[in-house]
Image 1 (cartoon, rainbow, N blue to C red):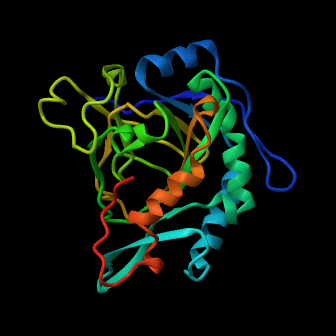
Image 2 (cartoon, rainbow, N blue to C red):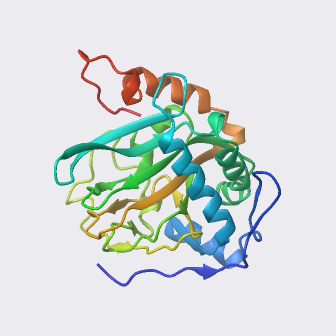
Amino acid sequence: MGETITGTALNTAALTGGNGFTLPRAMSAEESARYQADGFLLLKTAFDPAAVAAIEAEIERLEKVPEAPGQHWVYGEMVEDPEPRRVISRMENLVPFSPVFAGLSAALLGYAGEALGGPAALFKEKVNFKRPGGAGFTPHQDQQAGWWNYAPRFVSIMVCVDPATPESGCVEFAAGHHQRGMFREWEPLTDEDMKDMTFVPVATEPGDVVLIDSFCPHRSETNRSDRQRRLYFATYNRAADGDHLARYYADKHANYPPDVERAASTDYTFKV
């Protein structure tokens, strides 16, 4: 599997007044070149402990909001703890209901624009929870999930909230294979696709940021630790390719609405 990748250290970012976040600096030319070559880039300590604490507090606040139509979206899963119980596995569509995440997603626009080669627009965002024992995800490219319908390329920017290690199911990347383009839409990667890929775990600490090209193959393993792993993801496309956030969420709501808005008689399948 290879060694865990370490990233370039950045100067500490400041959490400014209100809910504004400030990133420390632009990417260097070397970092930008590495992102283009590998399809992902780890930037260490992009946010300081005060910023991480604000993000964590907002996640915990949103977890406590009673689930109801017209609010941020909540998805759950059943776990054995030791008796079966429902836990939150993902929250989406946060920006309209959270000044904290509105500020965070705005702060990340600079990195998104550098990665995409021009001004960026927010496409979607979410918090992924991986509880102890939580499953990983199979190798895939984000672009495979119907994103062609919106824009030709995206960058997802991951902000680490809890330590993510190989034991807790950190994200693993196959460097350079984004240059092969998309393999197939809506189909998992096959053994033949992956025969020359080496997936390397990218361990992160709270405040670290990872930029991910939408064609970069990645995966994660089960959380085998005794602590949860929370990661925030904001995805962007070039502003020149349009503002697709409202359309994306309308499309997703039509086929994969939040749990509280589902009809008991309908079988929902994730499509976008």
